[in-house]
Length: 199
Image 1 (cartoon, rainbow, N blue to C red):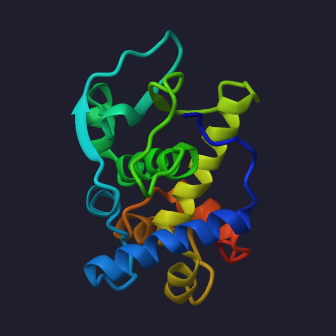
Image 2: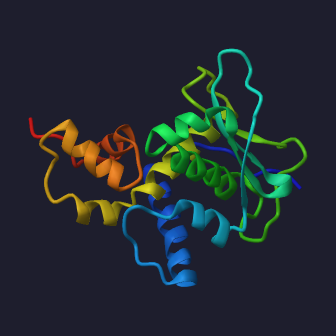
């Protein structure tokens, strides 16, 4: 069994894929799309992945927030950064969504529970760009864009944001209420062509 081919996915593909995920979750649970998106429940209920918090070793100079262990259908949140997850709204949810992105995009058949081949033992969620632009980097970019679309679905965010946020503080208040970081919300609004502040 081999892993899916890796290629950079378009923004439209990320939008379509995450809408399909949310539609399946709605059909299964009766949830109506709103913010914040219940990412942990999507991970556990829809995909039957286990979420655990335990230490993950980090190479020097790297910050690893989470990892996917496809062989045992587990997402690991790095216990070393528990204080970071507790102190800030957004990173834990985004990490879960990111690892789910790896499951959806990189598993041979995520809907059937078939996993990666043996060469894909774990996929790590790294904080920042390490400068590599190989297939692993493409996987990371795809997972980040998937996560952004999942935590802030386009239809929901467009309905929630009637006008640009007048200040960074206003944007921050909404980001906190919606379970995402200010940076995630700002980038998502820019991706959707909505801007984030009155000039």
